[in-house]
Amino acid sequence: MANVVVVGAQWGDEGKGKIVDWLSERADVIARFQGGHNAGHTLVIDGKVYKLSLLPSGIVRPGKLSVIGNGVVLDPWHLVGEIAKLRGEGVEITPDNLMIAENAVLILPLHGELDRARESHNAVAKIGTTGRGIGPAYEDKVGRRAIRVADLADEATLALRVDRLMVHHDALRRGLGIEPIDREALLAQLREIAPQVLPYAKPVWKVMNEMRKAGKRILFEGAQGALLDIDFGTYPFVTSSNVIAGQAATGTGIGPGAIGFVLGIVKAYTTRVGEGPFPAELKDADGERLGERGREFGTVTGRKRRCGWFDAVLVRQTCATSGVSGIALTKLDVLDGFETLKICVGYDLDGERLDHLPIAADQQARCTPIYEELEGWSESTAGARSWADLPGAAVKYVRRIEELIQCPVALLSTSPERDDTILVTDPFED
Image 1 (tube, rainbow, N blue to C red):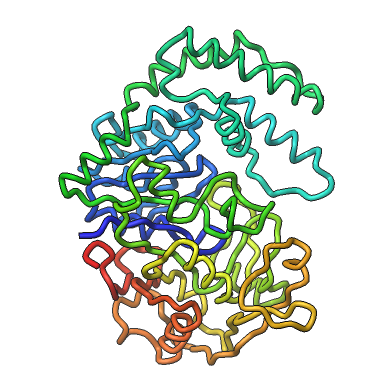
Image 2 (image 1 turned 90 degrees about the vertical axis):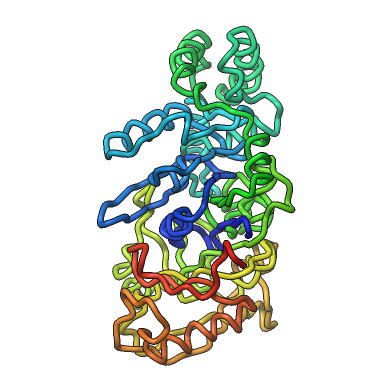
């Protein structure tokens, strides 16, 4: 019985929410291991839509333990708001079904202010941040000046942490023309929010290891996508955490031996929100058609996503860096009706053919896609639940993707509805 890590294998927005929900029905524990409330997961259950940013996707399922691990940076005010919103939609949330790592770092209002100020001052190359303070919070974590969940329980420690934080941040704020931090107001905000957060605080590493020893099924839920990984993504247009599967271990305090199956979520074409390189991007009618049919707007930001053909080079890379066991291919139905489809199978860099995206930003910008054309299909794939329901050309398209990325398809998703899924390999039983 394998514990499963779910990671996005492109630039995010691959449809992780539906797949995690589909898997969470058979899991006992669903754990978020990185990112913050910059994630956006949309779940459709019995026709009802749930939009999550911080809470694990399993929270909408009764009888499951949802975990926010130490690898996540936590905005406590957003947490309380998201809990209230879901409770208003009939979801029960208590310390019995939601657990937050005591050593998770807090996102404070000053982090969002810094994030937005930097982006507005950066005339050279905007990163495309959501402005929610994720990056600055991770900076403070690495700089050993962060406030963590456990600090909320002790006023003396909290005051010391705020003082240490102010030494660093007030200097930055002066340089950006922002007013100094109001120490007493910040402490008052933290004292007020603490009783609403602390009941969920637990030693996540301990509980997770106990669950593993007891034979419970654990589903590790990633946010964003592997091409936004701080080390292996298209730097500097990346998120501020490690997104790849190895982070599931360090982001929850459970050993890497606990990971049995890595499921990479892959869209049947490619999208990206924000700035940064995108070799297979389409700025023509086909790109517009993909965006319209796929309803490509960010769950969190509402920003229009850039669209392009499937990039097998990038997905092959992310399958390697995350050790992907199998992929879940989503949104195949968006390609219905295209007479011809293209897959990026390599890059041309100044006349040289490459089988990977180079690290250097200037080289990434000069890479042009090398395409392979495939026959499209006119029949609908929406709602298909078996291979027999798919047009022959659609099956050929999926099989060619498997060959090019050197990784098998484990699941095939054909609509936002959770049951419209073709199961090839059960990740929990692999």
